[in-house]
Length: 300
Ligand SMILES: Nc1ncnc2c1ncn2[C@@H]1O[C@H](COP(=O)(O)OP(=O)(O)O)[C@@H](O)[C@H]1O
Ligand SMILES: [Mg+2]
Image (cartoon, rainbow, N blue to C red; front, side, top):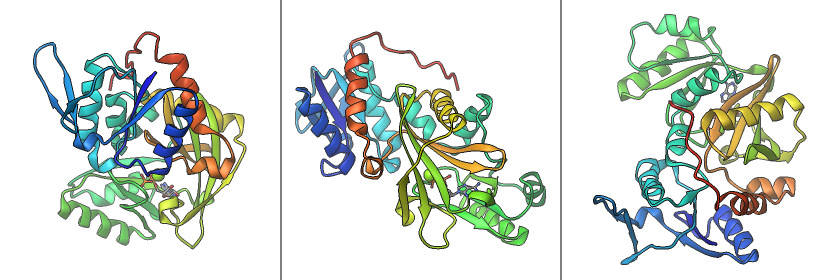
């Protein structure tokens, strides 16, 4: 098959691994920098151009869209969808996953456990928001943050109020969340491919940071999930309409709580767990790309 990996960096580890595995199976693989693609939109003829040439005859795209380029990147994914090309993540599911409010709404609707969350933008009712979220300590998050940036722990109600006021001044939407103290500094990343968990690791922050993101200096170790955790990850992926994703969860006293579902999960987990995630994704492509295009059924 002709597989196009939509990625900004061909040197990126995940991109390299996907390319390597797909080539090893005899596929034709091309890495396309979607940021440099341009499209012509005319009735019945969706064209995509790259480096002065039309991109044609692609069977499958694997989008690896950076958070900073969600809008443009997903419009390129959508253009491939308009051509009927099989994609491992639909444009709408990627957009959904980049919005923490939308994600928490969908996860909650599906009955997936999430930390108690209040969402606000500009409000004079800061005390009410604080009370609703359960009072300090509270975690406050920018609605569109990534890699742990824009996630703040407010240890007192006063601090929570000050952080919210700062976000308010900047005009950003934010989430106020109960602080899951029992697993502070640790979370679980589970990779789901085609509805099944294929690799999982625990991430632990190495300093006293409550955020365990590897980008914030966290360290990953392989772990075995409980049945409940595996089911939760699978349910979360389904709720988001993502067939390939990384589900982040915390182990709490009341069971697994999902923090977010990542539509372009990194492959560092392969090094941590020894699982060949890229190969499982190529399996998934081989088994699904020729079939009927799946409709997005999330509806929100
Ligand atoms: N409610 C919470 N309670 C305790 N720790 C949290 C909570 N929410 C997030 N964290 C910690 O902060 C990290 C980043 O939060 P997350 O919501 O995943 O944002 P990002 O999209 O920036 O990764 C998590 O991996 C986790 O370690
Ligand atoms: Mg995260």
